[in-house]
Length: 441
Image (cartoon, rainbow, N blue to C red; front, side, top):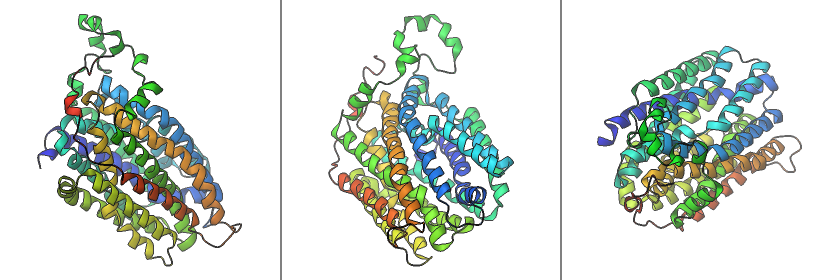
């Protein structure tokens, strides 16, 4: 496929290395945290609250920073801004690669929180904008699906690695791969199309001294004037009904995703005594199902059914699989529910593709950053709502015996996203008619 050729192949490799490094530590982090904070226990409210508190702080930071980084990438180039999160991601991984005692676990949470407040989610967000720079509107849904499929493939490889590596080696290998990913970005990733059109790239200070820069509008040079205001973000989100609807869907979908991510492993550990290896097995099933679907099914189904319809399909099965988790009556049920990832994975790339088609080419980074900012707001709300609920129903103080009650509540948020998605109708893309005035302040 032509999408896999040229400059995008280097982007896909960079995304693969980043996701491989990020995902391979996920099966181990629950055991590491509980061993440090609540040794010898299968239920630990402190760990649940710590995870929720971290997610909320990260959400507050990225709520502000994602639109800013997206807008900076429109002004200074995708590659320059991508360098920031790829480099900083090495630090928290390196801490646990060195030691996993209580002191270092707390240090990991502090550094990860501070770093992710600035750049959590920025790699996939900027990668989507990079794809939009280089792929025509008619092929973006498939390209976004392939990008997400590459991420899922890295998810599978990372969790498989964690399955067979010791905990210490898991964090050491993850740190090494993160370093390789940052180096690969700087050495091999070509500049995006928008990078070539920039007059004042962030990493080229020499150009700032040329006469050309003096002739440019000051808004293209002044770093602080590139910061998007609340009015700019509101205007962008309200520029199209589809963009507004997609933002609402993104909020409730991420409300459910963050809640599930923060609660599910603690729920499975308390309910069925899952450990690192079983978490890895579950994630491998999810990853393989999602990878096959995104790389093989989505390029066929997206042109045939349209992004709006595929979005609704993905969100419906997302609700269904969360509901099944909540009522799991045996240890094999979560594995069966994970197979729904074959259809769930349609939601994210379809939502992003719908947004991409309804903004100007020079606003791709800002638009994807704004949607990510909306998702970040869900990162704030979700742990505040679901972490206390999870801790309560996994403890002996639960008002009634239903350990999966918080998971079921998370599923209702996913159902709201599905209902909202049914009101989205495909419309002709307008970004191709809005190429002019991209550099105007």
